Figure 1 (cartoon, rainbow, N blue to C red):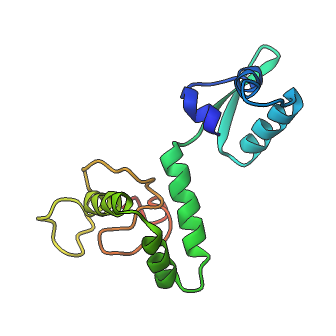
Figure 2 (cartoon, rainbow, N blue to C red):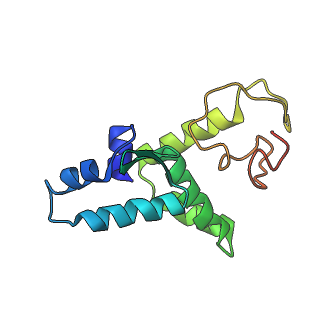
Length: 147
């Protein structure tokens, strides 16, 4: 995925292979299998171009990281303790980034508590991983009726 995100455009197996071979020896079939697995999992889409495919990321690296964090957090038997432990591992810079992200997700300071209206500010997290302004996070925005 790193190579696909790096170019930010559809890439072929051969392009990824040539890039990886600058660092280590790797077989064409290995790269092809990994890209096919990513396609099967829904992380990349592919389009035929002649006898080859061009692969393109379905989501951004930030959205991918957010989904991984959300999955790990949702599997915890004690989500609050997991968050406390996670925050304890963060550097000062990471805590500041978290604070900035919470401010963005919450929207303007003049929003009423529990306001569930549309939010127009920029969002840095994936829509399905960002909590609502009232602190709930029951599934994706589509599952919540577009909120």
